[in-house]
Length: 143
Image (tube, rainbow, N blue to C red; front, side, top):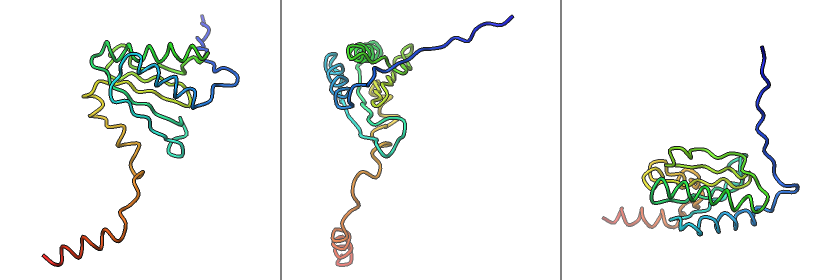
């Protein structure tokens, strides 16, 4: 006795909305429910999975879930069905995959623990100028 495999159908509109439109929609959704500390990180060239990460905090598990639900609702208004939504049951960290934009909504303690901002921005700051290093070395030698 065999059963048919269950197929999950996902689709993006043809063509998908431009990334800047998707980002504006995500920002509007998180602002609508007053998400805190919203950060957008450009990961083009660092990840082949997505182009942008949007990270936001909620004040409680209910708030985190509501923000993620609002992102899904706003995306559907653009005729975009998320490729995946993870973490809704615990709602300490909910990920909404919209293709070119991945949204992470987290409780502050979870966000602090995983430090995604630091993880994805390592190396973005230019190295200190040689002049600064020479000045520091000279100052140390004078002491």
